[in-house]
Length: 334
Image (cartoon, rainbow, N blue to C red; front, side, top):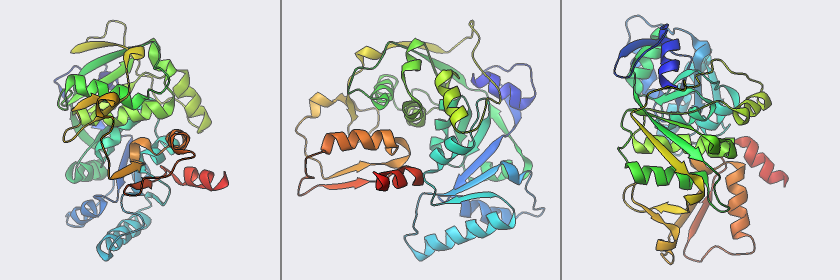
């Protein structure tokens, strides 16, 4: 899938892993974590230009509301620049990746995001990858960039997850198996009959966390679940990059979903995975339900079902941060 999407973006019939190509970008997302730095660099350019403002999406989500005068100034710089250059701008709408998935991402797109978890867009069959300020600036000014075509690890999913086991347990188990660097600059591609049993929320969680294994991107084939999501959000498929039957992979993993169990990543590395049963009784100081990986309404419902009728322990701080404004509004309407 990665090779097909890059080939399309490079205007080539086909590409192979290890080759370098100049590619056109479909979308460029940036948030308030680094956009002010990009703007500062842009202002120093001798010949200032933006290739296509219509492909830029800027989202304030990391520090909102602003927590200091410095952050407020960075937000204002981002807000003013976006208005001056007619850049699509969101503030207070929710986490950047959720906004992108709900409003913009289409299968087959090649997307740069100034955030490492941009690989989440693979849940809709798009090649999303995180970049730094300089790469983002170059792409913003030229509309192009370069990519080294990655090798691909294929994960064939079979069966269904048991009750009480989440897609996060699956991806953490995979990371524990291949290590936190096991997919360094590789594409992680997911398919198999078991994929159809995982909803879009779970798919986003899986692809989002692939960067924790070092992945360049994560990709899932477009199926009925993805098409239903697109239809519900008023979009369609740009390019179906379904892999060929004889596609060659660096390595193939076959995973029986029924064998996955609840796990936890212990300090201090994400691949230090242990079954939940092995850490039973460990006291915690803080619990957090939110972030770009577990703040969707499906996650909040699971959390609510667990804590219903109970009280937060006296010495524990429990934070709940909904993923998007629509989710927050829905909570207040319950």
